Amino acid sequence: MGMMSHYSIAVAGMLTIAVGGWSGASGISNGSLVDDSVKTVKVAQINPASVIDEVVWVVGDEPILKSDIETMRMQADAEGMKWDGNPDCVIPEQLAVQKLFLHQAAIDSIEVTESEVSQDIDDQINYWIQLADGSKEKLEEYRKQTISQMRLEMHDDFKNRSLIQKMKQQLVKDISVSPAEVRAYFKDLPEDSIPLVPTSVEVQIITRQPKVSVEEVNRVKNTLREYTERVNSGETSFATLARLYSEDGSARQGGEIGYTPKATLDPSFANVAFNLTDPKKISKIVETEFGFHIIQLIDKRGERINVRHILLKPRVTREDLDKASSQLDSLANDIREGKFTFDEAATYTSDDKDTRSNHGLMANVVDGMIRTSKFRMQDLPTEVAREVESMQVGDISKPFEMINSRGKKVCAIVKLKSRTDSHRATITEDFQAMKDIVLAKRREQVLNEWVANKLKNTYVRMNDNYKDCEFQYKGWVK
Image 1 (cartoon, rainbow, N blue to C red):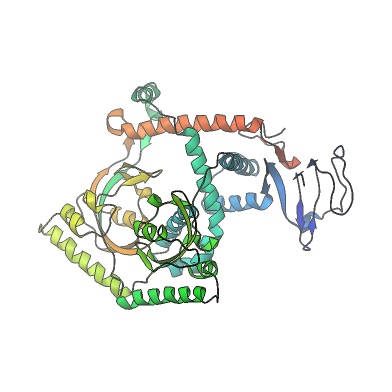
Image 2: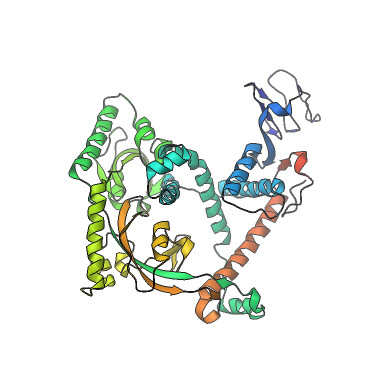
Protein backbone atom coordinates (compact mmCIF):
# COMPACT_ATOMS: atom_id res chain seq x y z
CA MET A 1 0.00 0.00 0.00
CA GLY A 2 1.31 3.45 -0.87
CA MET A 3 1.42 6.61 1.24
CA MET A 4 -1.90 7.83 2.55
CA SER A 5 -2.14 11.58 2.83
CA HIS A 6 -5.28 11.79 4.92
CA TYR A 7 -7.68 9.62 6.87
CA SER A 8 -10.39 10.08 9.46
CA ILE A 9 -11.56 7.67 12.14
CA ALA A 10 -15.30 7.68 12.76
CA VAL A 11 -16.86 7.11 16.15
CA ALA A 12 -19.03 4.21 14.99
CA GLY A 13 -16.01 1.90 15.28
CA MET A 14 -15.41 1.49 11.56
CA LEU A 15 -12.39 2.88 9.76
CA THR A 16 -13.45 5.34 7.08
CA ILE A 17 -10.70 6.46 4.72
CA ALA A 18 -10.98 9.72 2.82
CA VAL A 19 -8.17 9.61 0.31
CA GLY A 20 -6.69 12.88 -0.77
CA GLY A 21 -3.93 11.27 -2.82
CA TRP A 22 -2.03 7.98 -2.94
CA SER A 23 1.61 7.50 -3.84
CA GLY A 24 2.08 4.42 -5.98
CA ALA A 25 -1.35 2.95 -5.12
CA SER A 26 -2.58 0.23 -7.47
CA GLY A 27 -5.88 -0.72 -5.82
CA ILE A 28 -7.95 -0.97 -2.71
CA SER A 29 -9.33 -4.01 -0.92
CA ASN A 30 -12.98 -3.55 -1.95
CA GLY A 31 -12.07 -4.20 -5.54
CA SER A 32 -12.30 -0.63 -6.83
CA LEU A 33 -9.16 -0.15 -8.89
CA VAL A 34 -7.29 3.12 -8.69
CA ASP A 35 -5.04 3.99 -11.60
CA ASP A 36 -1.87 5.97 -10.85
CA SER A 37 -3.28 8.78 -12.93
CA VAL A 38 -6.33 9.01 -10.71
CA LYS A 39 -5.55 10.77 -7.46
CA THR A 40 -8.93 10.75 -5.67
CA VAL A 41 -11.47 8.17 -4.59
CA LYS A 42 -15.02 9.12 -3.71
CA VAL A 43 -16.18 7.83 -0.36
CA ALA A 44 -19.14 8.43 1.90
CA GLN A 45 -19.38 11.93 3.33
CA ILE A 46 -17.99 12.09 6.90
CA ASN A 47 -19.85 14.07 9.50
CA PRO A 48 -17.16 16.31 11.10
CA ALA A 49 -18.84 15.92 14.48
CA SER A 50 -18.23 12.16 14.36
CA VAL A 51 -14.48 12.39 13.69
CA ILE A 52 -12.37 11.63 16.76
CA ASP A 53 -8.96 11.77 15.08
CA GLU A 54 -7.34 12.40 11.72
CA VAL A 55 -3.96 12.63 10.05
CA VAL A 56 -3.33 16.31 9.32
CA TRP A 57 0.32 16.16 8.24
CA VAL A 58 2.61 13.47 6.83
CA VAL A 59 6.39 13.98 7.03
CA GLY A 60 8.37 11.30 5.20
CA ASP A 61 6.42 8.22 6.26
CA GLU A 62 5.48 9.63 9.68
CA PRO A 63 1.90 10.86 10.28
CA ILE A 64 0.94 13.69 12.62
CA LEU A 65 -2.50 13.25 14.15
CA LYS A 66 -4.87 16.00 15.15
CA SER A 67 -4.79 14.45 18.63
CA ASP A 68 -0.98 14.89 18.73
CA ILE A 69 -1.45 18.64 18.21
CA GLU A 70 -4.18 18.89 20.84
CA THR A 71 -2.12 16.91 23.37
CA MET A 72 0.88 19.20 22.88
CA ARG A 73 -1.35 22.26 23.23
CA MET A 74 -2.86 20.98 26.50
CA GLN A 75 0.57 20.14 27.94
CA ALA A 76 1.86 23.60 27.05
CA ASP A 77 -1.22 25.30 28.52
CA ALA A 78 -0.79 23.31 31.75
CA GLU A 79 2.83 24.53 31.99
CA GLY A 80 1.91 28.13 31.19
CA MET A 81 3.87 28.13 27.92
CA LYS A 82 3.35 31.06 25.56
CA TRP A 83 3.49 30.48 21.82
CA ASP A 84 5.52 32.70 19.49
CA GLY A 85 2.83 32.94 16.85
CA ASN A 86 -0.42 31.15 16.05
CA PRO A 87 -0.40 27.85 18.00
CA ASP A 88 -2.50 26.24 15.26
CA CYS A 89 0.54 26.69 13.02
CA VAL A 90 3.44 26.63 15.49
CA ILE A 91 2.50 23.31 17.14
CA PRO A 92 2.20 21.15 14.00
CA GLU A 93 5.42 22.66 12.62
CA GLN A 94 7.27 21.79 15.83
CA LEU A 95 5.92 18.23 15.63
CA ALA A 96 6.93 18.04 11.97
CA VAL A 97 10.49 19.16 12.78
CA GLN A 98 10.67 16.41 15.41
CA LYS A 99 9.62 13.91 12.72
CA LEU A 100 12.53 15.09 10.55
CA PHE A 101 15.04 14.38 13.33
CA LEU A 102 13.44 11.01 14.09
CA HIS A 103 13.57 10.08 10.41
CA GLN A 104 17.26 10.98 10.24
CA ALA A 105 17.97 9.10 13.47
CA ALA A 106 16.56 5.97 11.85
CA ILE A 107 18.69 6.50 8.73
CA ASP A 108 21.83 7.01 10.83
CA SER A 109 20.99 4.02 13.09
CA ILE A 110 20.96 6.18 16.21
CA GLU A 111 20.04 3.96 19.15
CA VAL A 112 18.56 4.52 22.58
CA THR A 113 18.70 1.63 25.04
CA GLU A 114 15.81 0.71 27.28
CA SER A 115 18.00 1.41 30.29
CA GLU A 116 18.49 5.00 29.09
CA VAL A 117 14.75 5.46 28.53
CA SER A 118 14.04 3.90 31.91
CA GLN A 119 16.45 6.30 33.66
CA ASP A 120 14.90 9.35 31.98
CA ILE A 121 11.40 8.22 32.96
CA ASP A 122 12.51 7.53 36.53
CA ASP A 123 14.09 11.00 36.72
CA GLN A 124 10.80 12.59 35.61
CA ILE A 125 8.71 10.52 38.02
CA ASN A 126 11.12 11.29 40.87
CA TYR A 127 10.77 15.00 40.09
CA TRP A 128 6.98 14.68 40.22
CA ILE A 129 7.25 12.80 43.51
CA GLN A 130 9.33 15.67 44.91
CA LEU A 131 6.58 18.11 43.92
CA ALA A 132 4.07 15.82 45.64
CA ASP A 133 5.86 16.23 48.99
CA GLY A 134 7.94 13.12 48.39
CA SER A 135 4.89 10.83 48.32
CA LYS A 136 4.30 8.28 45.55
CA GLU A 137 0.78 7.80 46.88
CA LYS A 138 -0.03 11.51 46.57
CA LEU A 139 1.36 11.56 43.03
CA GLU A 140 -0.76 8.55 42.04
CA GLU A 141 -3.82 10.16 43.59
CA TYR A 142 -3.20 13.47 41.81
CA ARG A 143 -2.60 11.90 38.37
CA LYS A 144 -5.19 9.14 38.88
CA GLN A 145 -2.62 6.60 37.65
CA THR A 146 -0.28 4.10 39.23
CA ILE A 147 3.47 4.63 38.84
CA SER A 148 3.53 1.64 36.45
CA GLN A 149 0.80 3.19 34.31
CA MET A 150 2.72 6.47 34.17
CA ARG A 151 5.85 4.62 33.00
CA LEU A 152 3.92 2.81 30.27
CA GLU A 153 2.27 6.01 29.07
CA MET A 154 5.54 7.96 29.00
CA HIS A 155 7.74 5.35 27.33
CA ASP A 156 7.34 6.11 23.61
CA ASP A 157 7.45 9.87 24.09
CA PHE A 158 10.62 9.69 26.19
CA LYS A 159 12.28 7.28 23.76
CA ASN A 160 11.57 9.67 20.87
CA ARG A 161 12.87 12.62 22.91
CA SER A 162 16.12 10.75 23.53
CA LEU A 163 16.47 9.85 19.85
CA ILE A 164 15.89 13.47 18.82
CA GLN A 165 18.39 14.72 21.39
CA LYS A 166 21.04 12.22 20.27
CA MET A 167 20.44 13.12 16.64
CA LYS A 168 20.88 16.83 17.38
CA GLN A 169 24.04 16.13 19.37
CA GLN A 170 25.40 14.13 16.44
CA LEU A 171 24.74 17.01 14.05
CA VAL A 172 26.49 19.64 16.21
CA LYS A 173 29.19 17.54 17.90
CA ASP A 174 32.00 19.24 15.96
CA ILE A 175 30.76 22.79 16.57
CA SER A 176 32.99 24.86 18.86
CA VAL A 177 33.77 28.50 19.62
CA SER A 178 37.07 30.09 20.62
CA PRO A 179 37.62 32.65 23.40
CA ALA A 180 38.27 35.25 20.68
CA GLU A 181 34.86 34.53 19.12
CA VAL A 182 33.18 34.90 22.50
CA ARG A 183 34.84 38.25 23.14
CA ALA A 184 34.03 39.43 19.61
CA TYR A 185 30.36 38.48 20.00
CA PHE A 186 29.88 40.53 23.17
CA LYS A 187 32.31 43.34 22.36
CA ASP A 188 29.89 45.60 20.52
CA LEU A 189 26.71 44.68 22.37
CA PRO A 190 25.09 47.57 24.27
CA GLU A 191 25.09 47.03 28.02
CA ASP A 192 21.36 46.37 28.23
CA SER A 193 21.78 43.54 25.68
CA ILE A 194 24.45 41.74 27.69
CA PRO A 195 22.76 38.74 29.32
CA LEU A 196 21.72 38.87 32.94
CA VAL A 197 23.29 36.02 34.91
CA PRO A 198 20.69 34.78 37.42
CA THR A 199 21.47 34.24 41.08
CA SER A 200 23.50 31.07 41.55
CA VAL A 201 24.51 29.02 44.56
CA GLU A 202 27.01 26.33 45.50
CA VAL A 203 25.66 23.67 47.84
CA GLN A 204 27.26 20.87 49.83
CA ILE A 205 25.15 17.89 50.84
CA ILE A 206 25.30 14.92 53.20
CA THR A 207 22.74 12.16 52.79
CA ARG A 208 21.84 9.21 54.96
CA GLN A 209 19.99 6.34 53.32
CA PRO A 210 17.68 4.65 55.85
CA LYS A 211 18.60 1.07 56.60
CA VAL A 212 16.01 -1.33 55.23
CA SER A 213 14.89 -3.95 57.73
CA VAL A 214 15.99 -7.57 57.34
CA GLU A 215 12.32 -8.55 57.19
CA GLU A 216 11.70 -6.22 54.22
CA VAL A 217 14.78 -7.50 52.35
CA ASN A 218 13.64 -11.09 52.93
CA ARG A 219 10.15 -10.22 51.69
CA VAL A 220 11.56 -8.86 48.43
CA LYS A 221 13.91 -11.80 47.95
CA ASN A 222 11.17 -14.35 48.65
CA THR A 223 8.93 -12.62 46.11
CA LEU A 224 11.68 -12.85 43.47
CA ARG A 225 12.25 -16.52 44.32
CA GLU A 226 8.53 -17.10 43.86
CA TYR A 227 8.70 -15.46 40.41
CA THR A 228 11.61 -17.72 39.46
CA GLU A 229 9.69 -20.81 40.53
CA ARG A 230 6.61 -19.75 38.54
CA VAL A 231 8.69 -19.31 35.37
CA ASN A 232 10.64 -22.56 35.86
CA SER A 233 7.41 -24.52 36.43
CA GLY A 234 5.97 -23.21 33.16
CA GLU A 235 3.09 -21.42 34.93
CA THR A 236 3.92 -18.12 33.25
CA SER A 237 6.69 -16.32 31.36
CA PHE A 238 9.42 -14.06 32.70
CA ALA A 239 8.24 -11.25 30.40
CA THR A 240 4.68 -11.43 31.74
CA LEU A 241 5.84 -11.17 35.35
CA ALA A 242 8.13 -8.27 34.43
CA ARG A 243 5.24 -6.38 32.83
CA LEU A 244 3.06 -6.95 35.88
CA TYR A 245 5.46 -6.45 38.76
CA SER A 246 8.84 -4.94 37.80
CA GLU A 247 9.49 -1.49 39.25
CA ASP A 248 11.81 -0.53 36.41
CA GLY A 249 10.83 1.47 33.33
CA SER A 250 11.65 -1.57 31.17
CA ALA A 251 8.52 -3.31 32.52
CA ARG A 252 6.64 -2.16 29.39
CA GLN A 253 8.96 -4.31 27.26
CA GLY A 254 8.62 -7.31 29.52
CA GLY A 255 11.78 -6.27 31.35
CA GLU A 256 13.89 -6.17 28.17
CA ILE A 257 16.66 -3.55 28.28
CA GLY A 258 17.88 -3.77 24.66
CA TYR A 259 21.46 -4.41 23.52
CA THR A 260 23.60 -2.63 26.08
CA PRO A 261 27.38 -2.45 26.63
CA LYS A 262 28.73 -3.63 29.98
CA ALA A 263 30.13 -0.23 30.92
CA THR A 264 26.70 1.42 31.02
CA LEU A 265 25.21 -1.13 33.44
CA ASP A 266 25.50 -1.28 37.23
CA PRO A 267 28.67 -3.36 37.86
CA SER A 268 26.88 -5.95 40.03
CA PHE A 269 24.13 -6.32 37.46
CA ALA A 270 26.59 -6.48 34.55
CA ASN A 271 28.78 -9.16 36.16
CA VAL A 272 25.84 -11.53 36.55
CA ALA A 273 24.18 -10.67 33.22
CA PHE A 274 27.32 -11.19 31.13
CA ASN A 275 27.98 -14.55 32.79
CA LEU A 276 24.57 -15.94 31.77
CA THR A 277 24.78 -18.52 28.98
CA ASP A 278 21.39 -20.28 28.93
CA PRO A 279 18.28 -18.24 27.99
CA LYS A 280 16.13 -20.85 29.76
CA LYS A 281 17.73 -20.22 33.14
CA ILE A 282 17.10 -17.31 35.51
CA SER A 283 19.93 -15.70 37.44
CA LYS A 284 20.41 -15.65 41.16
CA ILE A 285 19.08 -12.58 42.95
CA VAL A 286 21.29 -9.55 42.28
CA GLU A 287 21.49 -6.51 44.56
CA THR A 288 22.31 -3.11 43.05
CA GLU A 289 21.91 0.45 44.25
CA PHE A 290 18.46 0.41 42.62
CA GLY A 291 17.11 -2.64 44.45
CA PHE A 292 17.01 -6.41 43.86
CA HIS A 293 16.84 -8.07 40.44
CA ILE A 294 16.46 -11.41 38.71
CA ILE A 295 17.78 -11.59 35.14
CA GLN A 296 17.08 -13.72 32.07
CA LEU A 297 19.40 -13.79 29.05
CA ILE A 298 17.95 -13.03 25.61
CA ASP A 299 21.01 -12.67 23.38
CA LYS A 300 24.63 -11.51 23.18
CA ARG A 301 26.16 -9.60 20.28
CA GLY A 302 29.86 -8.96 20.68
CA GLU A 303 30.36 -6.59 23.61
CA ARG A 304 26.63 -5.95 24.04
CA ILE A 305 24.01 -7.99 25.82
CA ASN A 306 20.21 -8.03 25.80
CA VAL A 307 18.47 -9.36 28.90
CA ARG A 308 15.15 -9.18 30.69
CA HIS A 309 15.05 -8.32 34.36
CA ILE A 310 12.58 -7.78 37.17
CA LEU A 311 13.42 -5.06 39.70
CA LEU A 312 11.84 -4.85 43.14
CA LYS A 313 12.69 -2.03 45.54
CA PRO A 314 12.55 -2.59 49.31
CA ARG A 315 10.32 -0.15 51.18
CA VAL A 316 11.60 1.98 54.03
CA THR A 317 9.41 2.60 57.05
CA ARG A 318 8.67 5.87 58.78
CA GLU A 319 10.67 4.58 61.73
CA ASP A 320 13.68 4.02 59.44
CA LEU A 321 13.39 7.57 58.08
CA ASP A 322 13.03 9.12 61.52
CA LYS A 323 16.14 7.29 62.74
CA ALA A 324 18.23 8.52 59.78
CA SER A 325 16.92 12.07 60.29
CA SER A 326 17.86 11.97 63.99
CA GLN A 327 21.40 10.84 63.13
CA LEU A 328 21.82 13.74 60.67
CA ASP A 329 20.43 16.20 63.22
CA SER A 330 23.14 15.14 65.69
CA LEU A 331 25.78 15.32 62.96
CA ALA A 332 24.72 18.87 62.01
CA ASN A 333 24.93 19.99 65.64
CA ASP A 334 28.45 18.52 65.96
CA ILE A 335 29.53 20.46 62.85
CA ARG A 336 28.04 23.70 64.20
CA GLU A 337 29.93 23.13 67.48
CA GLY A 338 33.21 22.77 65.59
CA LYS A 339 33.87 19.12 66.42
CA PHE A 340 34.62 18.59 62.71
CA THR A 341 33.91 20.35 59.42
CA PHE A 342 31.11 19.77 56.95
CA ASP A 343 33.79 18.78 54.39
CA GLU A 344 35.09 16.05 56.70
CA ALA A 345 31.61 14.81 57.59
CA ALA A 346 30.61 14.63 53.92
CA THR A 347 33.78 12.76 52.97
CA TYR A 348 33.57 10.13 55.69
CA THR A 349 29.88 9.75 56.57
CA SER A 350 27.73 10.67 53.54
CA ASP A 351 25.92 7.92 51.62
CA ASP A 352 25.89 10.09 48.47
CA LYS A 353 28.48 8.46 46.21
CA ASP A 354 28.24 11.30 43.68
CA THR A 355 29.43 14.01 46.07
CA ARG A 356 31.33 12.55 49.02
CA SER A 357 34.63 12.40 47.10
CA ASN A 358 34.32 16.17 46.57
CA HIS A 359 33.54 17.12 50.21
CA GLY A 360 29.81 16.95 49.49
CA LEU A 361 29.86 19.65 46.79
CA MET A 362 26.97 19.12 44.38
CA ALA A 363 27.81 19.14 40.66
CA ASN A 364 25.61 20.70 37.98
CA VAL A 365 25.45 18.15 35.17
CA VAL A 366 24.44 19.38 31.70
CA ASP A 367 24.09 16.98 28.75
CA GLY A 368 25.72 14.23 30.78
CA MET A 369 28.80 16.34 31.60
CA ILE A 370 29.73 18.13 34.82
CA ARG A 371 29.94 21.77 33.83
CA THR A 372 30.09 23.67 37.11
CA SER A 373 29.34 23.54 40.82
CA LYS A 374 27.05 26.56 40.51
CA PHE A 375 23.28 26.10 40.27
CA ARG A 376 20.43 28.40 39.46
CA MET A 377 17.75 27.87 42.08
CA GLN A 378 15.39 26.22 39.57
CA ASP A 379 18.08 23.69 38.63
CA LEU A 380 18.48 22.34 42.16
CA PRO A 381 16.41 19.39 43.38
CA THR A 382 13.15 20.82 44.69
CA GLU A 383 13.74 19.85 48.32
CA VAL A 384 17.27 21.28 48.30
CA ALA A 385 16.13 24.56 46.72
CA ARG A 386 13.39 24.86 49.35
CA GLU A 387 15.99 24.69 52.14
CA VAL A 388 18.61 26.87 50.48
CA GLU A 389 16.17 29.67 49.61
CA SER A 390 16.21 31.18 53.12
CA MET A 391 19.76 30.21 54.15
CA GLN A 392 22.77 32.48 54.57
CA VAL A 393 26.23 31.49 53.29
CA GLY A 394 27.74 29.07 55.82
CA ASP A 395 24.39 27.96 57.24
CA ILE A 396 23.62 24.26 57.70
CA SER A 397 20.03 23.15 57.19
CA LYS A 398 17.86 21.02 59.42
CA PRO A 399 17.40 17.40 58.21
CA PHE A 400 14.87 16.90 55.41
CA GLU A 401 13.72 14.06 53.14
CA MET A 402 14.24 13.85 49.39
CA ILE A 403 14.28 11.41 46.48
CA ASN A 404 17.84 10.97 45.22
CA SER A 405 18.96 10.50 41.60
CA ARG A 406 18.50 6.74 41.93
CA GLY A 407 14.90 6.96 43.04
CA LYS A 408 15.61 6.21 46.71
CA LYS A 409 14.08 8.16 49.59
CA VAL A 410 16.92 9.55 51.71
CA CYS A 411 17.43 12.06 54.53
CA ALA A 412 19.79 14.98 53.94
CA ILE A 413 21.36 18.11 55.35
CA VAL A 414 22.91 20.84 53.19
CA LYS A 415 25.33 23.70 53.65
CA LEU A 416 25.16 26.85 51.54
CA LYS A 417 28.76 27.26 50.38
CA SER A 418 28.33 30.39 48.26
CA ARG A 419 25.73 32.66 46.69
CA THR A 420 26.32 34.93 43.69
CA ASP A 421 23.58 37.50 43.15
CA SER A 422 22.10 38.25 39.74
CA HIS A 423 24.31 40.54 37.60
CA ARG A 424 25.29 41.47 34.05
CA ALA A 425 27.72 38.91 32.63
CA THR A 426 31.41 39.80 32.38
CA ILE A 427 34.15 37.97 30.51
CA THR A 428 36.35 37.76 33.59
CA GLU A 429 33.68 36.39 35.96
CA ASP A 430 31.24 34.58 33.68
CA PHE A 431 33.25 33.39 30.68
CA GLN A 432 31.73 29.89 30.71
CA ALA A 433 28.18 31.26 30.76
CA MET A 434 28.97 33.66 27.91
CA LYS A 435 30.69 30.92 25.93
CA ASP A 436 27.62 28.72 26.37
CA ILE A 437 25.43 31.49 24.93
CA VAL A 438 27.58 31.86 21.82
CA LEU A 439 27.91 28.10 21.39
CA ALA A 440 24.15 27.62 21.74
CA LYS A 441 23.50 30.25 19.06
CA ARG A 442 26.03 28.62 16.72
CA ARG A 443 24.47 25.19 17.24
CA GLU A 444 20.98 26.59 16.74
CA GLN A 445 22.10 28.12 13.45
CA VAL A 446 23.54 24.79 12.25
CA LEU A 447 20.38 22.88 13.20
CA ASN A 448 18.15 25.46 11.48
CA GLU A 449 20.20 25.15 8.31
CA TRP A 450 19.98 21.36 8.53
CA VAL A 451 16.17 21.44 8.83
CA ALA A 452 15.88 23.81 5.88
CA ASN A 453 18.04 21.54 3.69
CA LYS A 454 16.32 18.37 4.90
CA LEU A 455 12.96 19.78 3.89
CA LYS A 456 14.07 20.05 0.27
CA ASN A 457 14.28 16.27 -0.05
CA THR A 458 11.52 15.09 2.29
CA TYR A 459 7.99 14.11 1.31
CA VAL A 460 5.52 16.43 3.08
CA ARG A 461 1.76 16.57 2.79
CA MET A 462 -0.58 18.57 4.97
CA ASN A 463 -4.25 19.32 5.38
CA ASP A 464 -5.28 22.35 3.32
CA ASN A 465 -6.21 24.17 6.53
CA TYR A 466 -2.50 24.65 7.30
CA LYS A 467 -1.27 25.85 3.93
CA ASP A 468 -1.83 29.55 4.69
CA CYS A 469 0.24 29.42 7.91
CA GLU A 470 3.29 31.61 8.48
CA PHE A 471 5.88 28.92 9.21
CA GLN A 472 9.39 29.38 10.59
CA TYR A 473 10.82 27.22 7.81
CA LYS A 474 10.06 27.61 4.14
CA GLY A 475 9.39 24.50 2.11
CA TRP A 476 6.61 22.75 4.01
CA VAL A 477 4.10 23.55 1.30
CA LYS A 478 5.29 21.75 -1.81
